[in-house]
Length: 217
Image: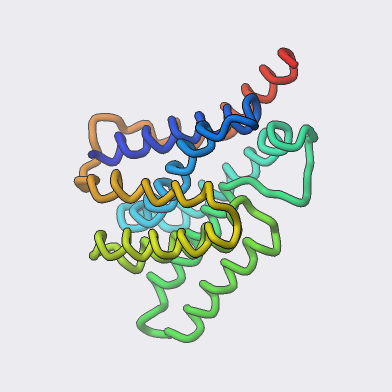
């Protein structure tokens, strides 16, 4: 599978997940299918670091979409413009990228401070109550650390996800199925290069789902 195909899979499964969460909360199949999306996005944050021409611009882009996604996220899942107890997943992805950017830049020269700062990014995700919290940041770090050993990385992800699921809810066990498309990834960009489509889809689809739910219900 190409990069664009995997990203499209992540977007589609995310949409299914959110449709289920907003319109059919009592039907678990939507949420089960949706478990595939987040690990795929985490994997591509790690991949993105390797391919980006500017880590600073990459971080800035993620932070920008974190900000513009917050209102649609709060409206869709909490019915209010601002809900401080939960922040959207772009903040998690931003902190995960910050963590691996620190490791990528400073791990060899200054290993102890680099590791401490990466851990601080995971803790900050938890303090800010970002979607998936510390788990998401650590998952991005795992994919980065095993970027040259993908099979081992998927195995570590599966074990890590299993432990997390036992603590937080068995439905999250299905996220391990994302390992199959990750292993099928061929490292090629693919036919589509809709970079900003994948960024913009998150806030736009949440806003649309909120408006449809408000009108229909």
